[in-house]
Length: 80
Image (cartoon, rainbow, N blue to C red; front, side):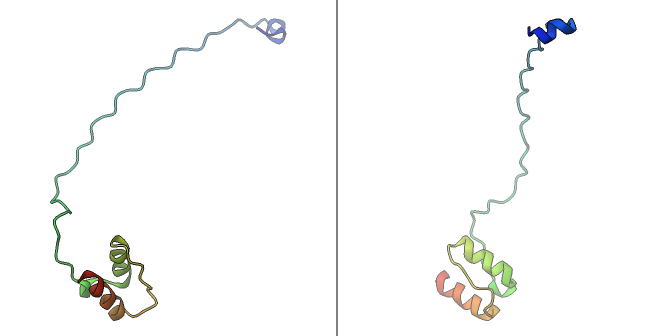
């Protein structure tokens, strides 16, 4: 103990042992249809943000400043 602790008359206090972490609870995952099953994609139903996101998922960077029609044409060229 330090001299300061002796001066104050403090006793040495031992820290409690840390509690062991509890095992994580298993998480229930809802069963949904597998997304790996290819669904037919309808570009005409997508907005510009969705078209851009779809392009990014497939490694294509689209410019949203272009018209929606032009974005769809670019995606169809890549999709073929």
